[in-house]
Picture 1 (tube, rainbow, N blue to C red):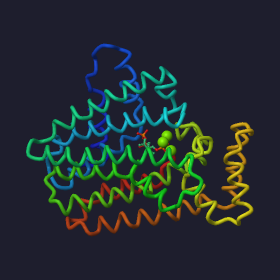
Picture 2: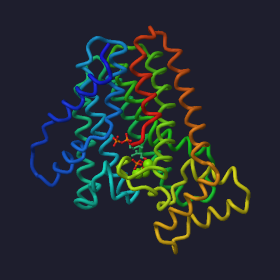
Picture 3: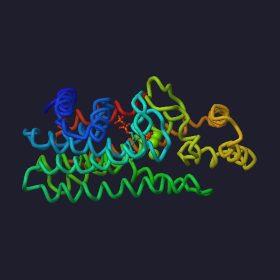
Picture 4: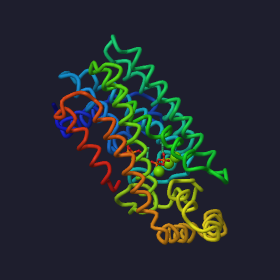
Length: 324
Ligand code: IPE
Ligand code: IPE
Ligand code: MG
Ligand code: MG
Ligand code: MG
């Protein structure tokens, strides 16, 4: 078994050596910029960790894992346009640094480049890898559309929100694990258990992302604080606040949330104050913990020696405590 650190180093090296020295520059520069800024590179790490649980040969999963990271970065280029998010990984988002057309087209190219790398999966599992990847990619788009639809819907249920984040975020973590497992030679049942583990840590991961969007420091988080409030995102924080408070305060929250006559800073400060009054941070953490517990249950059902699960468990724990 490799340590997570070794796997992360492989990924770092692999990304550093991606060769996109092609023309035109305006298409490839934003791609290199984004991938070079790093980020946590969580999805390729999950892919390699899963492969390593079933096979001594993880090299065969490296290029597909890079393909998944390229796909993830493509979704971020387009997501930042959709969310009007000016900062990503502590630097200007691609559509801000260049322009929207550049972010659209470089993103499209990254989608195709992702396929190029996934195509380097071992031949005997290529079809299955593509089946999982395509389903995942379509579901991510479905989730993104729900996310935007919900900005304009008045009554979003918590269950609808949870399904939305399962689609936009969790399935890609789950798919990364499943693809790694398939390449490592896991049987269908084991690959599915890892998928279920990934869905649950993925939901917890997005809950934490929603929390950090309000309660974090832009220097650590690398994204502008309060962006979800400004974009009227019906996050867990907002929906839970409305659920647990009295009707009068719920109405006050709703009004403040939509009051575009307030300055951005003021609106963020007022909504955050309501979240603080209701101890929303604690409520979000309780929900996150419930999904972590479900993830661990799925992993318990995986019948492989415990020592083969340790790196993955450690990685999941570190995500729970993350501040960016
Ligand atoms: C950001 O993903 C998009 C979400 C699903 C919340 P990450 O938090 O993994 O972003 P990077 O790749 O580490 O920057
Ligand atoms: C992003 O959700 C999900 C995808 C990019 C598919 P968010 O919009 O919350 O992600 P961040 O916070 O911008 O990274
Ligand atoms: Mg966003
Ligand atoms: Mg978004
Ligand atoms: Mg977010």
